[in-house]
Length: 419
Ligand code: ATP
Ligand code: MG
Image (cartoon, helix red, strand yellow):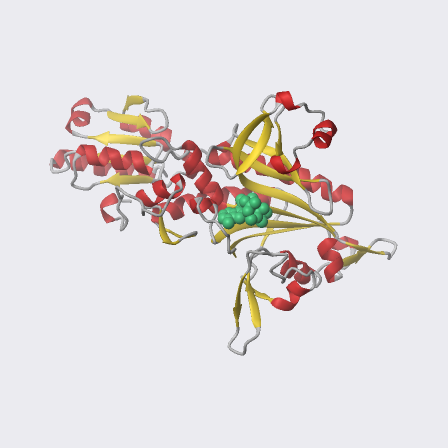
């Protein structure tokens, strides 16, 4: 893509009321647009990152047997009354609306109720399970504080998976597989080594749930972490009894701020019992289905990468989710030879399957480099009269600043998608 045709432009300043670093950088880079507090639109660069994150999660969820669906975000009040969760005392972040005839509807905060009701039509026998169903769908939550940019939005897309199993054993086996798939997701988006599976409060059906917490100063959560043992606990379950159960001592745990990028939760039979979602075993005996839910916020994850990997010059994307693989920066494009060389390299790289943003704008070198640093594409390739003379291009790795000189052939090999 030619940068000169991109409708967004970089900005020197983020809106004054935007306090979160992730949103400041993403707005300045032209990735997102702030509609109002906690409500953000995704622009071409931002949507490319978002879609790559989505695809990584999709691959991992399909890999553990997930089947993708898309439920509605307009929700039937009566379904929510079955579990008592229509009440604003139980779910305090509801957005609700009304039909023309006055009947009330909910805007999805989550989807346990409608999905459990739906699955009643398809699950009745032991032969119908296990089943794992997921979606990428918008959630609306009237969050009290929306000061963390896209990490805590009032409208956001969540990947939510729901498991339907016949026994506690079958459920636990899937739960562990999903936990491992989550760790692969966080590794693949660039948060490996700083994201920890974390004991958190479990609600009524089990002692714990599991959160996935990325260590980061901007986090809203406090966790206690042993990097050595790879164990972490959320502050909400940090007490002497739990420490004893887990064989941990206070001295080996460090207190850090962290961002909850995902969580997985045993639901037991709470929802299946409320909706009469049961199955008959081989002997014809009826049992409630055992359920679990598994969430990842895509914007939360993208914002976390923006927070955790950026530096004083701007965003730093790992290649797996970068909006483009390479940033071709042409300097002195009024020189016809330079322009020709840039066009050729752009064509060769693109044909090899690399995604390239070509800065073909008529602007000063300093401005182009500053923009390139802010946008954060993993490698910058400079084309100028100098590279023309050398037959090699200056390549700067965004994350490290490491500079090398490479031929077109070397670049094509390096940037060709790895299969
Ligand atoms: P939190 O404690 O941060 O409010 P939660 O416990 O409400 O999170 P869930 O309802 O379990 O979270 O949602 C699953 C995942 O969705 C979270 O782990 C997080 O990644 C994401 N998420 C939750 N709320 C938001 C939000 N307001 N904006 C963006 N992502 C969110
Ligand atoms: Mg919440």
